[in-house]
Image (cartoon, rainbow, N blue to C red; front, side):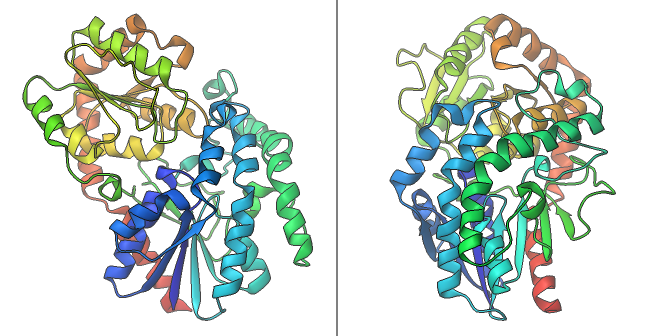
Length: 416
């Protein structure tokens, strides 16, 4: 049986699938990855056969939209821009797959696989890497763009989420999706966040101590650990210059605002000022041009990319947007986190860290050098935070989300 992996999104969505593909190939399975075109080089580095969904220009247009990073408008922009990937995915699966010979493992946004499941009868495994993607009345996630959402009762947050489905997500995603389904003689989808869960199997790539399982989660959901996969990113080791910088002084603060962020100028200006106020060194990670000031002072360095699994164990703290993959790497390193959320799941991940005593959250408007310095000083001076981070590091070291997920996929194959 051939396993077809479908990953739609940015690095945080695609790298876990490169990890899954590499492990499945090691176990003797035939695997091919379909993902946005810019990830072809990472798939080639991992020796994974690759099918491009769209072009590099298509991907750049999607992530360059300023509204993509707006707390309320971001979801609408996301689903509008990635709607084309649904048709590309379905067409590819329809051309190259046969029931009984193919298993599809798809990311949250890889909903073209769900269309293929409904039309062609292909077995599909849905993979959610964020707790936010799983609905629950009793433990509803914190949605972006809702002031003081973390203070609301869970059932009220759930009700607001249903409103976001109706007026934001479904309004952006369903017209084009249902036009495709109509051409295929399929009934329309009424609510995307319910339908995108495969009835075959759902893999939740986060541990139960980070997001406790709920009685109203789908029965076909299996929870696994974090996918720690930055070794499949743009570099596997620290550059010589960065290693020398780390050796030359005390542990620095590390700042990143995500691989796809195009509007991080204010964040990195504040990062430089924060290093000055605290007297700490800093590492700024930003792959996009124009994000970081050109006149960096001594003690602050900028790199497009560095493997967090190697860098963060040598850092004092991580200040970042709150993406779940970045969260997981800092947990594995056992360091405090300060989350400056932007959109999507960032607010939810930040609140989970805060509740577990592993970090703090500052909204972007409150991310000033003086305020952030006070928060960081409190985190770094707290024995309670240090103990919580050490406990999280030990927990993550005992887990392997990629291996556990592949075990679940193989059990599914055996059962069929």
